[in-house]
Image (cartoon, rainbow, N blue to C red; front, top):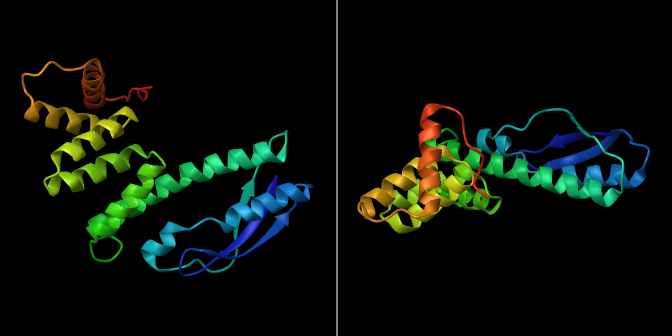
Amino acid sequence: MTTVEVQIGEQGLVTDARVLASSGRADLDEAALAGIRRCVFHAVLATGQAPTGWLKTQYVWVSGEAKQAQAAYEELFARTRQRAEAALAMLIEAGRAGSAAPAEAASLYRKAMQWRHPGAYYRYGLILEQHGDDQLAAALFRQGAALGDCEAATKYLQLRQAQAPSAHAPTSDIYLAHRAQACAAGPELPPQL
């Protein structure tokens, strides 16, 4: 395990990082420092206030090669980044991080979609629908639903029904209809493979 301390600047970037407790392997300690230096702390961007002092984080390494540890870190970084970008976009869209900025929120939703964040597909689809692009919005709702977002499943089915009320539903739409019903009832179904 490597324990790292960081200082974060006003732009949400790491301004300094150091190893507080070594894992005993220099390559793993360097991987931890390299990883944390790549992070952007979106909460600082939203609030405009950087934390004071050193913040502590730990990297727990599992036995195996450093490449495997780096791959695990990259996956964790991707998941954390998509959540942070989607959450920040929602704050910006709602005006909770200053005045509402739909274009900036849309840009962050698109970034989160690159990391396959289900809710980002739904929120960006809503923006497109408000601008009259129902076809692209429906495609985004469908993708968000396939990734497990209940609101996206419901919205996709509503749009599809409005566009072609008598059309025969493909099997994938039947699955999404079941997902939307299950969401309304409570527990979420697993994402469609």
